[in-house]
Amino acid sequence: MEASSDTLTVNHHYLKSCIYYEVLQKKPIFDSYRNFCDTVGKDAMDYPDFQFWYYRFYHGSRDFDYDRSVDPEPKTLVDIPVVIMKKISNYLDPVERTCLRIMNRAMKNVADSFPPVFENIQVMVSDWSITWTLNSKRFSCKNERRGCSLSKPNCSIEKSDEYYIKKGLEYLAPVLKMPNIQVKHFSLQLFDETLNPNDLLPVPFNPKSAFIHCRSTNKVVQFLSAMTPGHLESLGIDVSSAERRENYGIIYETDQFKQAKNVELKPVWGFNVEDLAIFSHLKKFKCHLRSNNAFEDVPRIRDTVLTFENFKSCVLSFSSGFNRFPMRGIADALGEEIPIGPIAEREHRTITHRYCIPDSNECLKFKITEEQWQCRVLIVKVS
Image 1 (cartoon, helix red, strand yellow):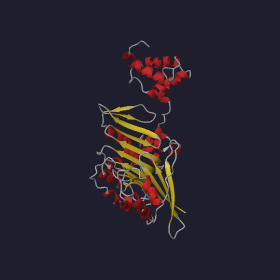
Image 2 (cartoon, helix red, strand yellow):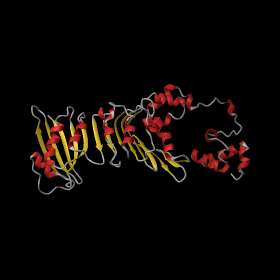
Image 3 (cartoon, helix red, strand yellow):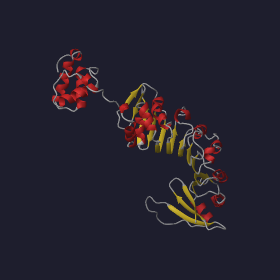
Image 4 (tube, helix red, strand yellow):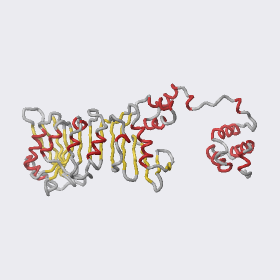
């Protein structure tokens, strides 16, 4: 294969001789095509033509002058019957179908005939990357010195001159806006406040549960408002990096919060006991409490929870003024003794208490655990 590439590209017999040479080397076809392109140029012959001649020579034919025009027109992907295309799609998982639907209109229609169901979608946007996980498959688009780099499962890294968020959204947004998409849990961690709900989410968006971390309560409300009230059963919110002066109340006024069943809040500071009223409609909730007098506030917490009609359980991380671990105050309030003696490694000092609800066969079970950085109070209504 010493002839010049310019001569080879205009002489089909030379090109076929090169292919025949690759066959004689008994190399895999992909390696052979790569070597062929390195020798005669990438534009000398498309892969489908190379593949045709490679396998003719491989199976013993030596006719360089074979007239391919007498062959039937080769079938393409769009010529596959719809029934077969649907069978193929049925064997793919939801993430694989998202790749199938971008191939052409026919494949898109077939892929969209299967409701896309995702157990878990996680999105994180920072000032240097956007990453997302669809079920267990991870994608990312990272900011580079010039443009960005896109990583997809089982694919080589793709370089682009585009802005990293714009490039990432070209792949992610169409997935989230697929017709009839079903999402069990959606997580958004937003450290770049330039992203808006319309850039990413359909309206309405219907996850069963969601977790939102933003630097501002206004941004939380924007994304929360894109989700269908009532359909969103569980909600987690973290605005721990937000400024103290922000108005957290606008979150509690949303229909999404009011119609949720389970809520976990992680504000920058804790709630007072009287603030527990915002959780009165919930079955389960989790938050951080502050108190200057655990002995007085623990009975107030108990009596407040008893008024919640739908209450099943709650988890309260507790602190008390300068004493961050008010185990003694809680124990005294419940009339329980703190266990003494050594504690096994990785275990925590724990108090269990039951309070019988008046005129009821039910009771509140308290489990108070002194952990490394907090005192954790679990309250469960039991029969």
